[in-house]
Length: 464
Ligand code: FAD
Ligand code: NAD
Image (tube, rainbow, N blue to C red; front, side):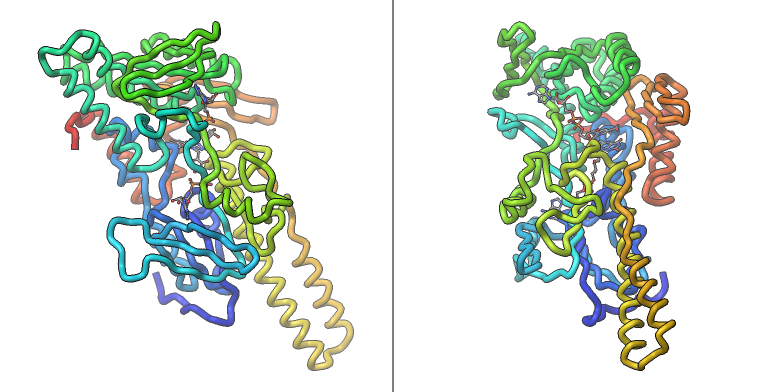
């Protein structure tokens, strides 16, 4: 990249919180000559979440699906400040953001406050445990890279511990019981990947144990994947049945103990599921920093689901804050698709704001120099046109999910209605769609190479 323009104290400051799908789409589309941009996030990279379930079993390496945020910001026209920090407080009255260094190594300063003119609030959401006892202590989650690595290590630990001689058969079966709670796409995709690992790799390396491994998916609702069409739900049920994944619908987990899950079935009876590994995937809830922001705007922010924004993605009750992605409560599902469209929309809003400010400045100058009325009129009209920013419009491109054994499902909106397809061909479509959407050429090469390596060499069973 060429020389970047330096920070300019006369320009407005845009602070971007997070570097997930929403913020990254914003930064990708941003023309930042007219702004000083600061990005703050506890991790210094973008994560391509749709392929995260593949990291839990080693189909993909973690590094293949991440890309440093600096890779993106160093290509922008004006230098961007990037901080690896966690925002603890947003003050919408003072227009400040407070953040801390939460990484193991800290410098002399452990907290910092900066002011913003505009804030792009895109901190995502955290895992919802519904306050169910024992979940935080005993379950694994699947949101970030360290989560996927923990799942992989615990899985191999269970298998190796089950290999010890002299244990009861019940204990071996418990260690080899892998339970997924939540039949949304995260839980279903993880169960699918786990099945592949079991049949393609563990069977070869642990022939005496692999046959005893049991995968169970627990879902409170009558069906898994409620956002997919009926026939694809049916297709998933059948595929899971063939793959010996036990789906327990209408079963609500009530408590998680050290080695056993307690759930209530449809007859309101309490049932126990002994487990070695538990992956908890029951959706999202607001992060503490988001709840704190809501509490500061009690009159306008009264949704439990997340931040309320207007149709231009401006935070209700605040000035200069835009909120996008999983931290918001909107009419559409919290997906990468929605967050990235919102981020992209915001980058266009900022381009229009730059244009408006430039025109306003021109108008002031024209007025000061007593320009002729026709020019003043035309400039004033241009300001009005530039002020007319269109509201955000979400365009649904379809839903895709991998369900294991080289099968995927896709609900694709078509001119003539909806196309619901599942199977091997959809799996190759799934692969090519995600390959093309990856952040960089580097990511595409790494992911394609990982897939090829997995096919030829199999997955690694070492517990790193
Ligand atoms: P995120 O992408 O989660 O980014 C939030 C950012 O905020 C992160 O950079 C985080 O580090 C940062 N952050 C967190 N706390 C703070 C803080 N205190 N201060 C500052 N920064 C903070 N959606 C799809 O459309 N298709 C899929 O196939 C798909 N697959 C998925 C698979 C998995 C396993 C998961 C977990 C999700 C998947 N999703 C998918 C959903 C999708 O990932 C989210 O909807 C999307 O990430 C939301 O984007 P976001 O920018 O709002 O949040
Ligand atoms: P989700 O909210 O989609 O599903 C969670 C499921 O957990 C629900 O079906 C819920 O009924 C169930 N549940 C909640 N509490 C329970 C309990 N106590 N016992 C048993 N079941 C319980 O969550 P997710 O799968 O993590 O997805 C989060 C978001 O990310 C969604 O918007 C989803 O569309 C998106 N996502 C999309 C993809 C994809 O498109 N392939 C993949 C992953 C995630």
